Image 1 (cartoon, one colour):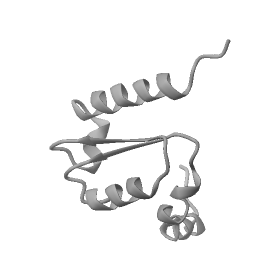
Image 2 (cartoon, rainbow, N blue to C red):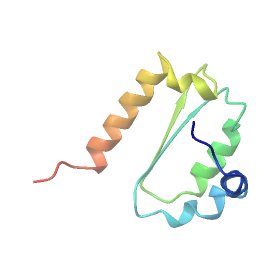
Image 3 (cartoon, rainbow, N blue to C red):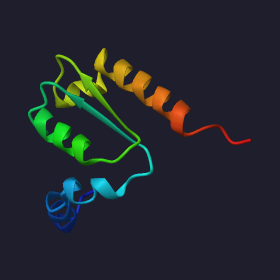
Length: 94
């Protein structure tokens, strides 16, 4: 059985993406969220997206919560958006 050290949990809880999101540009960033997320409220995702530089994209799954992105139909929507984003920003090697 694998375990997670308590230090890792402390580090995760102490991480604030709003402190660094504006430093990602000019590298592209894809945000995927839901409109009924109770773990990461949609307004927090919107604020993070607003702070990010271009290029950026925001995908909001309607009628889904935080974990519904891992099952269909949410999962299929996430995969479509992710593959399209990869095709745009990660061209195949020559």
